[in-house]
Image 1 (cartoon, helix red, strand yellow):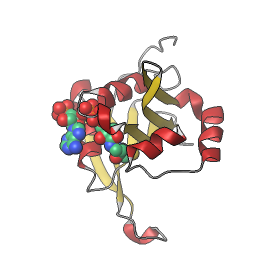
Image 2 (spheres, rainbow, N blue to C red):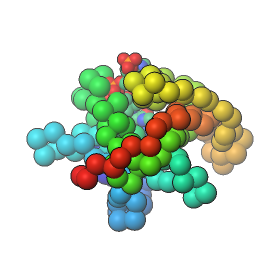
Image 3 (tube, rainbow, N blue to C red):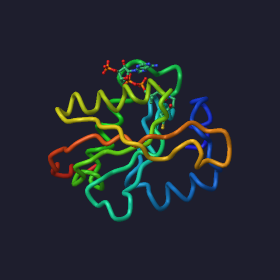
Length: 151
Ligand SMILES: CC(C)(COP(=O)(O)OP(=O)(O)OC[C@H]1O[C@@H](n2cnc3c(N)ncnc32)[C@H](O)[C@@H]1OP(=O)(O)O)[C@@H](O)C(=O)NCCC(=O)NCCS
């Protein structure tokens, strides 16, 4: 996961320990896409405490060589159908205003699911201790609850 996030070139890289801890404790709500045994994409997600009907996408990334072929959308759809996420009615994420690819990805998820994608203010630039754009919250839904598929 660490190498993959590093290879995306744009995602904020957390420590190797972070990803080890994350895979151990939040593996049920995360996903890695592989092609010929090589990791080519990932979704790092969790359930926000206090919002049992929401699944939050912390990081979603696809290797530059594999972008623009629908993999990001397929990953999000598969991630949303994971047993741990199937009961969720909302997919949420924060996406910077200048991240057009990510915005397009979540709008595609909404479009193919026949639901809305709403944006609301969330983390503002002044809340970051370093130079960082605002991260508005995207809410995609409401989805119907899915029957969890065994994976
Ligand atoms: C965001 C990202 C995961 C999208 O993955 P992808 O596999 O290229 O996405 P898809 O091919 O499934 O495309 C999904 C939609 O986004 C659109 N899209 C993809 N890249 C785009 C770009 N650079 N600019 C505008 N729209 C874009 C596609 O046209 C498609 O829209 P459509 O359904 O209307 O045709 C990928 O660009 C990436 O890894 N970016 C770097 C990491 C990042 O910024 N992650 C998000 C922040 S957590």
